[in-house]
Length: 454
Image (cartoon, rainbow, N blue to C red; front, side):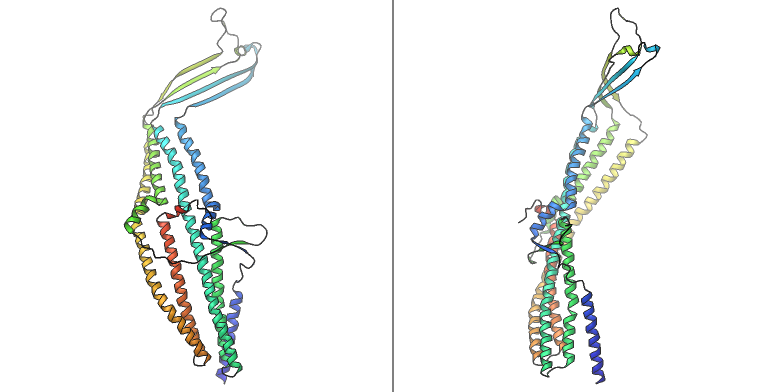
């Protein structure tokens, strides 16, 4: 009798502890939020339109256009106009008065070894900005897809736990009914209630995972927060879909090396470094330019009294000079060589990185292929187990109604079914996640660029 009271006391304490833990769980986080159903295609379109990282890289293309103009300016003519204005006085300047001097300078490069490289470098600046945008699009769309998938699996897990909760609630009612007719003890009812309450933390965790995934999805989309009113969050629609993917390693490797944005960006950066090196090394060669200088004095009387060179002829009021300028810095104390070596070292580092990434492509794809094969095998085994687990749970429920099974038998059967169903769901999620990683690794996310919302 004393041991029975002790057991009842322990069950009561456990019941209170589980209840407190479930109460502390942050449930209902989205109760006050507005949900907008969105498909994955719509999330892609919104990410492309509103994501701040993508918008920043689009602005970078405009900046690159300006940089291109700066590089091309090396071959264009230069002209400047300057002036001096003042007032002269004193005996040296006669009557004195205000004066003005206008000067103009113009030059046109005739020979500069750096001009061709400068033009090519300007064109590469725009290409680099576009490839940077493509890389950012790939990263952000991949993040959007993973957040979408995590939201779907969290919601499905929540529904799965709710199904188990329904079974446990029926178990509590059945235990209470058997207690009322004298076929069960109070301990049996409390055990059923503890099992029901022990599921609450799992429900709360699934709900938190869903909220976190939806928040990440909202951040990837780049939507602006609403100052007033309820929180607006996306609600992913659709189901996790399992698809068998067979990877042709040789074909996919060749295509990936040619199309992946980060590899293309590195190639363009290597080309740009080569052009910058040629621009610096142009200092080894002479520079020739056509120059013109002009100076005009509106009134020379204010500068002093000049004698007439020829009777009846006024003093000169303007001067124009035209010629060619030639410069050649033969000794630069290593300035050109040092800058060239610095650029070359950066270019070689990028080449090493590019070669390492290209060599890693077949290994990366092979790992993905093996992971998919492992998931296929695990899913096939889980599908065979789930049928057996469902039949076992039904059998235990029937035996419990007849008083031939214990609460522990039911808990073990329920846990086994939950574990099997959860394993199938996670296997499907991993399959989708690996296929998403395959699209990222092969550069296929650019196919979704400018995708309209459906």
